[in-house]
Length: 118
Image (cartoon, rainbow, N blue to C red; front, top):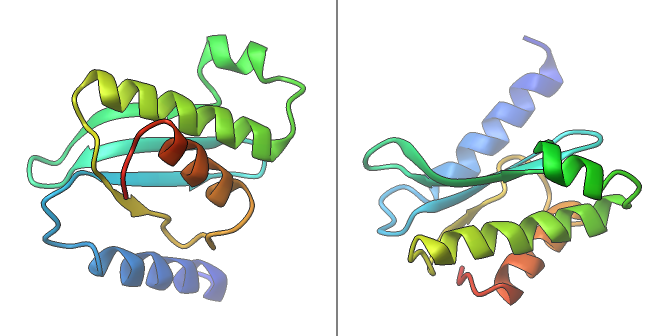
């Protein structure tokens, strides 16, 4: 394991430890160089309740030429709609090891505008 991988895992674990015991589901973000995905996870049961990704076939075509922050905002709005359909309104935001800046912040802001509280 390289130093950067170890540091990222340590940061992710540090962020997640602050959320342990929360009564709300966790909104977990994963971003790669080109794409972004998000899940609403129930940690007590260990299952994903709702998910959205820029790799979904219908979204991939629609967001093909869209810049990164706009793509992340579209995914944030989509996850908020899907969560509201399942009566989920309050979540804990899990940014993992990623800084709350750029695409992660755009996704969070769009999810808040869509009706999620965190």
